[in-house]
Picture (cartoon, rainbow, N blue to C red):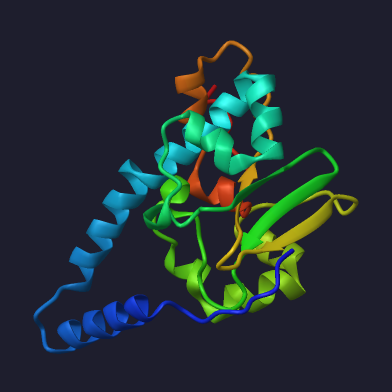
Amino acid sequence: MSDHDHHPDEPAIRAEALEHLLVEQGLLDPADVDTVIATFNERIGPMNGARVVARAWCDPGFRERLLADATAAVAELGIDSGPGGQMEKLVVVENTDSIHNVVVCSLCSCYPWAVLGLPPRWYKSPAYRSRIVREPRSVLAEFGTSLNPYTEIRVWDSSAEVRYLVLPQRPLGTNDLTEAQLAELVTRDAMIGVERAGAIES
C-alpha cells in the first residue's frame, strides 16, 4: 500500500470552488452537475471497468496478465491509460473467499477515472477516507456488505503514482452468461470494493 506525497490537484480545487460560487449565485443548478456526473459514471468509466472484470472472469490468461500488470492488460482492451484516465500505474487486487479488498485515497481522491468514471461524493468525503482505514468492516456493513468474521479485509490506499481496482468475485450461477452479460453485473462500487458484484435475477 502506498504512502502519499501529494495534495489535491490545483485544477480540481479551482473547479470545485467555481462550482460552489456558481451555485451560490444561482447560475448553476447542483442537479445539473449531478446529471453530468451520473452520465459519465453510467456510460463511460464504469462500463470500461466492467469489461475488464468480465474479461478476467471469462479468460484465465487475461486474468493472470491483469493481476501481474493491470496497466498493460487494460490496454489490450483499447482503454486509454494516459494522464486523462488517471491510471498510468494501475494495480488490480482480487477478492477471494478469504480476502476482501477495498480501495480508498486517504488524503484526497486519487481514482482510476478511465475504468471507474468520476469518483462518487462519498469516496471523497473525510468520513469515508478516515473510517474505511480504521473500521473497514463497519463501513462495509453500512454499504450493505456484511462479511464473514474470518474474512481478511485489505484496504488499498491510492496515490498519485498508483491507482487500484478491485476484481470482485464472480457471482454464483453465472457459468452460462456471456462476457457482455457478465459485465452488466459489475458495478462501480463493486470495483471499489464496498459491495459485491450483482447476482443474476431469478
